[in-house]
Image 1 (cartoon, rainbow, N blue to C red):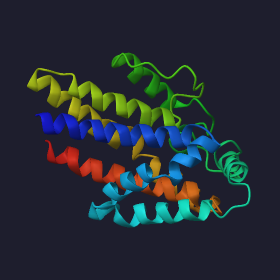
Image 2 (image 1 turned 90 degrees about the horizontal axis):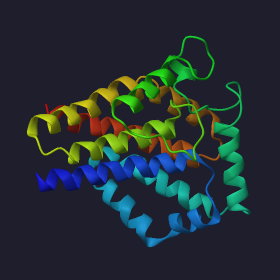
Image 3 (image 1 turned 60 degrees about the vertical axis):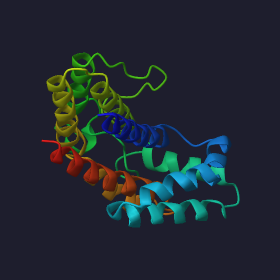
Length: 216
């Protein structure tokens, strides 16, 4: 059980890392961390899994390319804005409603469903991130909290229910639109840093699904 708890903590940390990466532009301080040894070690650990080897290597190559840009922080910020803060015609908007909603507008059914999940599990959305609840960063943050919720269950049956809730969430609230979002990022992100990041995210979600299905 202790091994599963530790493994769940690692899973949550990965989702929280991806959430923070897709929530806002990277600062110079953030970029220094991406160039550092801890990030190299972290990515090397992820890359030891066969399913993640290729996307991890692609993301590490993207980090290397980043360092060659003349004004890295400003240019990456421009990439972020062009992708995630623009229009459906020019960017890859990070909201489920834009891909699987019925109206083509923000705050469609996927956002309403996320708000219901926040209430159901008594998980609070981060106050400093004032976006519709179906933003990819919010969904990933929620998933990280859902994973930790499983670790807090002493009862075996409730623990299993919490693990199955993660499986349902990834299947029903992430994988229903994440591949479409990733496809748009691959098309729109000319430099490729964020495209490489979301490709890694998608590969990790697919790997995590396999893990959770094995828990059944």
